[in-house]
Image (cartoon, rainbow, N blue to C red; front, side, top):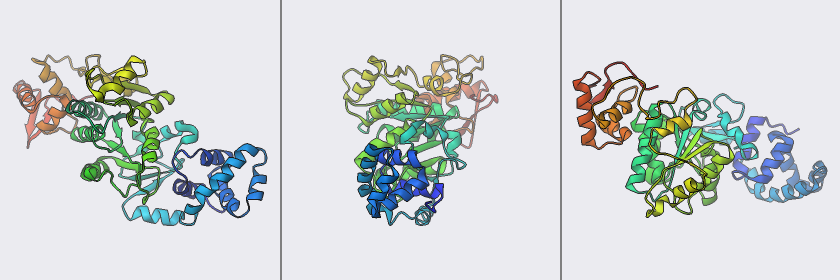
Length: 386
């Protein structure tokens, strides 16, 4: 026996194996986390006995035995108590399958499911992950793409969906900001430890994400973001309830997220862009190849991600029976969140300019449909979004 409990063994594996390490996943699937860890430690000293222990699978045994060389350098430092202490120093906590708060949606990843999550933030991931939408796209985004990403995220957040993205520059950052502006929950999945809010230029934004939701990683604090880890973390983002690709170049990490989402049988949508824009090539290809639905408006995200029966009418309007004098009034009304918001946040969520939002809100207020107090706009008639 290993002498290490399952939860502790999962933490160790998250430290010694890279994300989606096939040999580690095979061994854990064959023996369980605790016994697999015991095998890896024993194999380091007695490879012959280790091979015998897996004699029923000689080909896999050879591969896994070679993989021990990858895990060996990290084994000595991968003490579960030390890992927990390192996380606690930055206000983070580990989370493993079977514990309260574990997002079961990640189990759909099968062999590539993470061994553990390291979390900063109080969001209940078990509740929010299945009720979420991933909004992803290019770091080299356009103003159009950032505007649409923020609007899609705001609409989703206002409807009670968590917005999942990667915390990167460009579309990711715009999505997180849109969710925050709507007063919603957002989750950033990092490619390194949660002690390093990367990229550094988004550190302030990611601190806000922690306050409103969570920043998570499948590797313990102390691990640096690396290229391969960015690609690996995309599969976790793809486990959201639906994925929207806002902008993606011909070769883009966002396209790998879309591919993972499709493999998980999640709905994928893409935002169309100009045929002349390099930032839209990937999205247009997804739509052309029928690999993604066309997102015709930000409100479409609700049909993609909300449970059946909760989605609004086709035009995205609240089911109020109210008559609006202008399109801008309809958009502004639908963008006012449950807890209210300043006019600037309503403008972002509604996809309006600041001036359009102010005019629309004034019109709503004049007919008793909206009210403002202390700079915060609310719906005055008591109606709230579904």
